[in-house]
Length: 233
Image 1: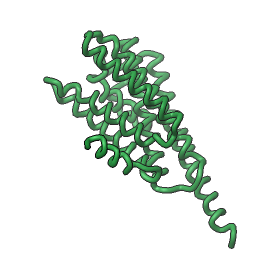
Image 2 (image 1 turned 135 degrees about the vertical axis):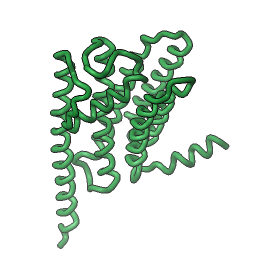
Image 3 (image 1 turned 30 degrees about the vertical axis):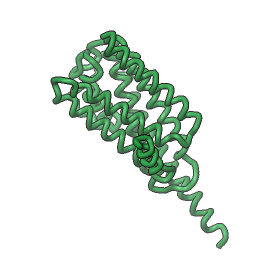
Image 4 (image 1 turned 90 degrees about the horizontal axis):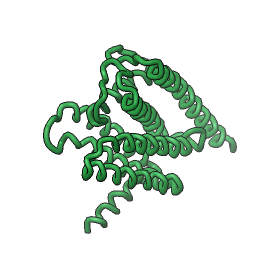
């Protein structure tokens, strides 16, 4: 009965709305990261892992139409779950860095799959526009994970973020990432080491470049669709 209900719900996600669900899942993941900052006791402090797993699941359902990437991303989720269980059972905190690498690869694979489906291909619709938002969120998330990996190996890379578990620093890393990606630069969190500075300005460049690519893609697809629609006139 449960599997039947889950199957029915998964069928609601189709090629006309899949990026809406995926974008919503990414937004909730970011919101859960902020909630993690105010939770200090009990199992609730690990809620970020639960939200991450839910996000993985929705991403897989949304991208199941791309078979090759679906298989690859599914294997990453399985590996991530194994890492989570191993860390919980054996208490090996260093496994967290493996989890971060797996998360980065998963979001990168998701980014590649979405990019193949929406940029410079076919006509524009609301699903593609929302998909472009998902790409932007994924860029910010990948860079946030990159900052967490950098902090793990080089503590003191940032003023305002100290070395700790990825649960503790994810919200701050995501905040700094999106502030940098949008070139806002509030200055409350600052890169200190040379490599951290390189990461930051590269992200700012990618953020500006991404906007140019998305706009040109949408304009190109719109013009192509216009000429197709009026070719018989």
